[in-house]
Length: 68
Image (cartoon, rainbow, N blue to C red; front, side, top):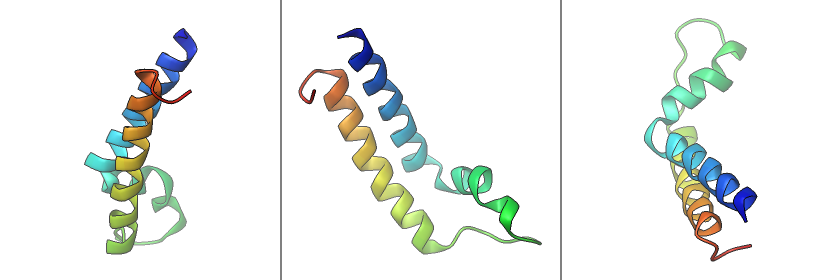
């Protein structure tokens, strides 16, 4: 029970991070691969926000015990 609550909260936090700050996530994970002043593509930002919303919802459902 406690593990699923902690896991759900962790998923929700990761999802909210993707939803709120996709540019920061891009800088932390992808920026090192490129030279110069590259920025995240609009497609990356859109997909990151959509996946962030999905992961946050799933995390909350797991934390509240709706999904097991």
